[in-house]
Image (tube, rainbow, N blue to C red):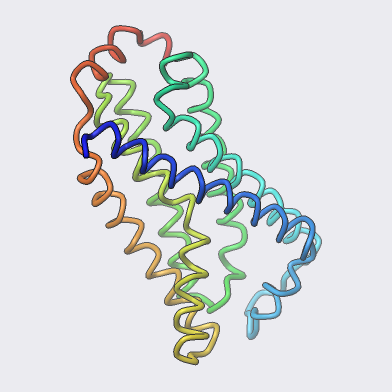
Length: 228
């Protein structure tokens, strides 16, 4: 299988997963359980009292911009859209980065109330800093017209859009699969997701292979510093 077909298959799989997860997040958080009763039922022994109206408002903002980041990132990985409109790619890229920033900020507010206590809160704060660092690095790389490095750092950044999915998969694995306490399983899920989010994107980058020279040259020729 050549590199082009391999990327098309990977993008199709990514698109299906992203769209399904966005739909699930919207249905779960805005329609099925808008009060987050199921999620909040696991938060026991918190040292800080949750001010529910404020927490729910921040949570809804968090979910909304997480979905926007996932959608914007997915669109910007489309080579067809990139070739049709570099300007749209650029604007959409900034939308992605602003969305990531807002997700990180709202996550920082909710971290002290995380299931599992201080250990989980620390992990969430570390995760947020790592995601922000990776995303800013992707921006710096394209400012310097390092197209391949920009693409690779964006892949690493986009992986963090699936943090919630990974956390719940790992939590379910320990909680339902082995009968561990939910809070401990959730903490393991957060730490486990950090490890996977730092490893899996690099495997994916190697699997995809390098960009073709013509793709890189065209991207550089049709871009200017003032456009980025």
